[in-house]
Image (cartoon, one colour):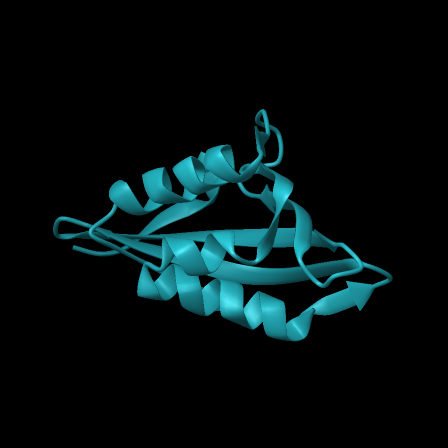
Length: 122
């Protein structure tokens, strides 16, 4: 689970949508943020992550604390740093992944809201 979390963060930072989607089962559900409707299935998950990357000139995910695992769950804090034109925005997020027996992500819940965003530079 630790390795998958690190690969997820690296794939995001590299803008590697195929690499991100490969970490999820084809029927995965992604709630991002957690209080919004889920993106369900490979096509919807791919579209969601593609859209997230299309909104920013670059997107970097940096883990800001340890990965905590319990059973088939992993939770970790991170900061998403998005460069949009000359603006740099940071959002603190806690992601929770549920893993299947094959080590792939079955579902993801991202805990954040717009009030968590802050300007890091311009």
